Image (tube, rainbow, N blue to C red):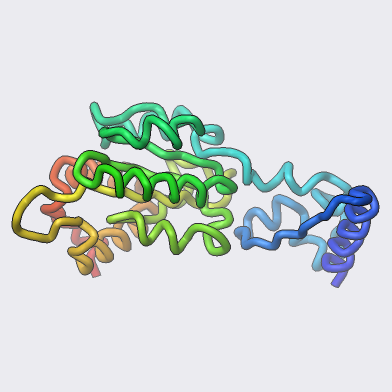
Length: 243
């Protein structure tokens, strides 16, 4: 109750400070690790001497405005480059979301959580314009996922999985990464024309990669390297993660 009371007091203070402007309180899910980091977790037990409970701005602790490459740039650059090989290029900047990404090519989208839904809408437009000529890789921290962009991600990606904190995504970032891949539509006269249409294999692969990432990011990378080269063959998964 002390935490709720504190949040209510913050809301009152914001209303007074904003004067004639509207203030919206937006609730979202964060991990238990981040609750501890912000100090909110301790508030429920009467420990009000850390984080937001001593007056620090909650925005310091929740990186809605930070892209994955801002938080772990060199590590992620290495990891993505090792399986995308020559197709790897720097993540699109915000201008590129609306311009370059709508031309033929391979694109890496790495938005901040606050911009994820906007990015997925632009990615969808790119796919509609050039279904046979674009490949998209999407990566974003799992914040605002349930509230804003989970459904859109599942619709636009052929394959997606969770990369849990580990070798290439530091544990201090708390929430894992969501990574999705959208391959071009096949020109073959025989289906499936979209990788997503092979539903059973897509779901099995996504779950297996998520499970693999809990123990070894290198194993995930090695599998993605094979899948990236031949997306419609679905290379066999390691026996240790196949259920």
